Image (cartoon, rainbow, N blue to C red; front, side):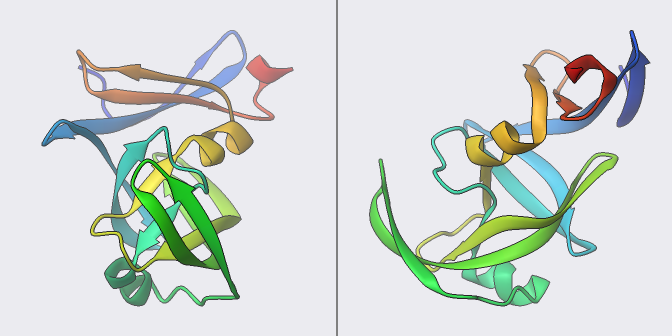
Length: 140
């Protein structure tokens, strides 16, 4: 089994990030502003990194306004913020994010990966999120 880290293949930098399956959800450990955080991968997420109020307070996230969102879970009013997000060996600074007071668990989903990755895959057998960040040689 591979350990967390990077690999180079055909000039691409590939980031292997360990995942776990918890209560039928894919969970990934990351850090935000240098502090550890647990994210649930949510492909239906409409914002990107979306933090629970408890995580936002613990991570020192500063709201910069509010806006409404609507999804499968219904409508919610969230607060905009930015955060430095690290998954595996890659960090993205000033990432558009939100704080959702209705969340019990912080999420990371499709808008984040669409902005930041050229290739995204899950290895469910071995337990890895596999990412090739935009700007990597494979994306060229």
